[in-house]
Image (cartoon, rainbow, N blue to C red):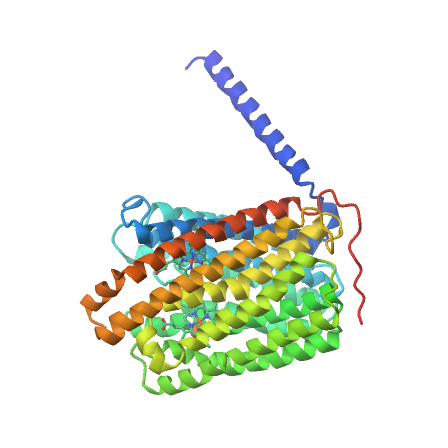
Length: 505
Ligand code: HEM
Ligand code: HEM
Ligand SMILES: [Fe+2]
């Protein structure tokens, strides 16, 4: 290659780089977000929210691929297999929700403690380390999943436990990042002031980080392995995440509606007591058929049947507060998503969970699409919703605390996004419930759980039709998400009015 070639390439590369920079600048001007409106903790929070939205998009994209493969099994076979798409779908979900929760906590931390965040630099480093690690793990998921399972593949490729397949090196990194996060929360409250909300949050984060380590050990006995794995999965989603949501909800009801602190904190204590009281031993509903002693049938059935009670309390809490404040809020989209959370949590986790939690019923429904029906409505209803509420809160402040009450410009967008996302997930939930019902009936009840019964149920026209309906409602969910992202990028952009003031009363 002679020098003129090299100069030519250099010139082209510089021109391309310039163009990319212009594009980035154009995008910044177009979205018109001004970070000087944010405090340091909030700046850190919006970093987390941004990655959360990107991973949410990835989750839905890979969900659509997996759903397509249910209908056309050869679709992308050998290139992007179902096992990989499913894994990316649910891992992206867990990780985007964790990003969202960390963002929510950083968002409320300075306000709640009344002081500036203590370890800002450390927090920023942790964010980039985590994001780099997540990117690498996703690339390995997509590119390197076929080959023998060895000790080294556990460390570098895949740990093999559903939802938390990340290889061991990434697990250790995640724990380190969580410790930095924990330090930041505790040190900031210690420097400023503690509150009931702060206390519950801190204790909950200890449990959340501690439980993660239960899913990190290699075990040769599959019963032992499952036993500990559920400590992460069940105790996260039915205990520590629920409490975290209680904390975030308590804070946002004060901010959005002006509810008195005394009221939200009293509710919070009651909810937390009920959640831990039922959710810890409710763990037993996953120990029915994995080789654990029989007493788990009674313990799991009894305590998990009580789990919906705190969720009823949360609905009453949110709707009662919103009602007494005549639904007057400084951020309508955020309030709407908070209300969606109260109902989604109650129906998805409470009602759909209760349906199959007694061992007499679970004997027939276990591991069918019934579980997937519940899984979709619960994760979306309980956790996607509250994160979306905070995305709206963040955007409002990022634009300089602009008006987001009655008469938002282009208000149809947030309402349609709300409708399409909730309608889409609800539609998928019903389609999966029908498929699960058919499987329980034909595979389990009629055919007695035989291998051939499995295929009879799987090939039944009502099962196959349900898979097509799931795809259809998945596409509606996808459309809702695209609209949501568009709305988040544009809402309040040309708004000049300041946010409506909600006073404590
Ligand atoms: C927001 C809270 C909740 C979330 C996110 C959630 C999510 C899930 C998911 C994803 C699964 C499938 C796990 C797998 O892959 O095997 C599952 C299973 C299950 N959930 Fe929940 N759940 C929640 C709350 C509840 C509650 C409150 C109950 C009971 C009242 C419940 C009862 C069950 C039962 C019995 C199973 C086992 C299903 C089977 O045997 O296949 N869940 N849950
Ligand atoms: C476009 C929308 C979506 C589509 C097409 C879709 C599709 C799928 C598919 C095909 C699976 C594998 C099911 C199986 O192995 O039988 C799955 C699993 C799962 N998805 Fe989705 N999904 C979508 C959205 C969501 C959303 C919004 C959430 C929650 C926020 C979610 C949470 C889950 C969970 C927890 C599982 C594991 C369920 C289990 O093992 O029982 N998905 N999804
Ligand atoms: Fe559970």
